[in-house]
Image: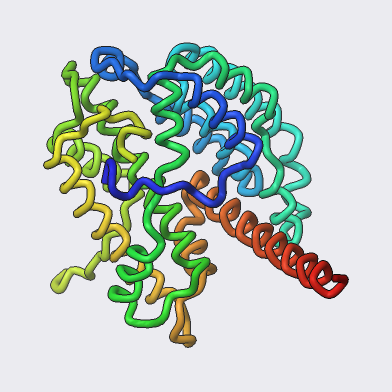
Length: 227
Length: 91
């Protein structure tokens, strides 16, 4: 999965791609194992904070999601970013709460989904401040994806009915995010147990168990046969 | 992909295999659940998936973003083809 399924996503923001290419060209790709192990990636607290705030404001969820994603690649000014983003979210929550009650129709949701809270200038500034290791990791994060043909084959064999192209796109996106959740939670588990190095299967299993408890993993619940 | 999300540049093969197994289970369960949700029509649509992830704010927003991007790309491709046709006809 690390090497084989990496594929350029067609959905990348073109501006970002351009800046990424120029930045990636100038960097050398020597990855320091020690720094890779020591950079703590803990976006889940920020994500959970964002998630809790968004429970009431469903429409706002889209805006918060794109701002929360900012926290995952960066490691150096993480706390600062997390703090600023938290304040940003609270401000938005206050403003749009009243409007949310009126706009229940979906035609406005497409508009909201298009609004990006990621300021491109800010993004450029953040990208410029990346170390080469961070940059290669971010590039990998952006460019990796699932092969559409494989996903389509899997979906069709599971569903038994023909699968449309948007469906494969959506499922690939969701699957990638699920991988992200598992890996990030695995890292958190590792730091809790004070281990370092590559993620081991037991961390992934623990992360999976925790996600199950949270209810983020769909499990086909069977009714108990006898009450 | 795992490196992009925070793992080592060289993930352990067992971890990768485990991740793959978990993912296949996840996708399978999602499809089964959405088939339960999808009413009389036999086909699955993106609406069913969106209904399933409605609780998860990040995934829901990402799905919307991907679908919107897809529409934009389709429109752009269509416009590009129309322009090409016009160009060819002008010659």
